[in-house]
Length: 97
Length: 485
Image 1 (cartoon, rainbow over the protein chains, first blue to last red):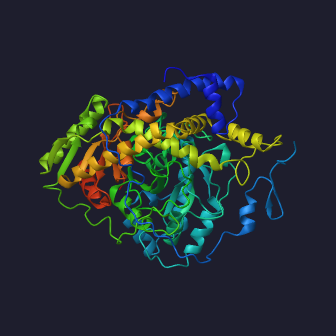
Image 2: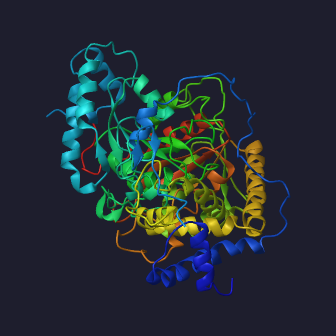
Image 3: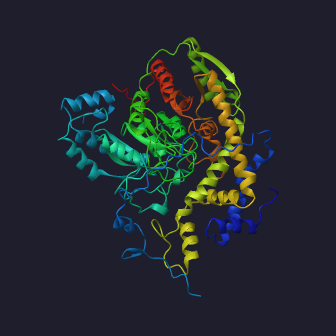
């Protein structure tokens, strides 16, 4: 990659849902450029097969029986939520504009 | 204070069986060791109260297996019920899992005693454990140097003889590389050998849990209880139960061993290479047939790893949104701000870099250019390894290109952390088992390791060679300078 622009950095930060402060943008621009230069080396590799390796080991997809089994306790799960209300996980109001 | 934990596993087991000691004696000793080695920073969370409680309960139970009552440390990306699991991240600083990983269930079913959670690189991303939110663990052989990573806490706690057993995880060398830097035995088993249920996912097609121990035999004994098909992990494999210790200390004469030419080029520091070559000579003397071979695309493995691991990480870490668990940005203006600022302040720099590059790799047309192509070449690497295993029993090389380096060096280069794992990453690409066994020391007394790679599901043969080398060299691997009696 010839150049990684400020806009491109902000775009990948948006895709990754990571907020960047003004000071961070240039720092990450330099660091991400270096990593993208590394992965760009793949473009020069030739003479490979067309088969994709999805899993390194061959295995059958054996689905278990669709029967009700032991589940995690509801109250225990809710305990880890930063904000909860009764049996519900609380999030900020979404429809306010 | 008696040093029971310095005894061999079989000796400790006999003392427990004969009721000359109790599990609580071992737990007490483990926590004394932790106190003595506080500066090494191997642990993020200790489970002292519960460990003593479990030890007390075991006094009424029959010593029914070799691992009964033995203390063990767990890497902090493996979920432990009611015991904080942080992944060395601010994001999970207060996360308390409400279930055990399958490996933890197995450990508990054998009545091993979990004493705490070990330090690591944040979300296992790194090769030095310096990306830990809780500060880097140190190398017991020289406390100014890195322990390696990402399982640096597990490696340093075994090396400093705090406990005899630990679990690590290995996505691109994270068990074998710190094992090499700290002078211990670390095994990354075949992908699918051990359930990943409860291991916080990083690169799902690469991650594998494995045992980290003081010696080869004890490593095989721990692997014996960890593996098996788990209906909670579709990628775990159903295999007939076998005893991984069964070939230990058997004759290695006539074994066919390959060395990839790439593993002995000038990417490896001379001192490490010289030590490796000494081992090759020993193996020849013992009647092994050694040949130098080519593995296709092996020199491209780091590039493939960067693409596959960062791509998969960006997807796996999307779950950290500040809503269901983990750190949450306070008083956000809206949902989008909750996501983006939770991730801004919850993740460290290395993790954010990898998520952003991973998002770049998987976005739009890039997925074909980078990710799909990486998977195609990954298939070629795997086929090339499997072809080699039609002729050879094992493949060997140095585990790392250098010995452990200074804690303060190489901090500014985001690529360096990947290059530390250049010799171990190809194994994760092919899903094969690989093990580090110590083979000696550098001039400045830092451990050097041998990497032994086996065919898929042939961990037994790896242990066979490793045990022979271990026995022949009979190294003093105790950084305290005392020979284990």
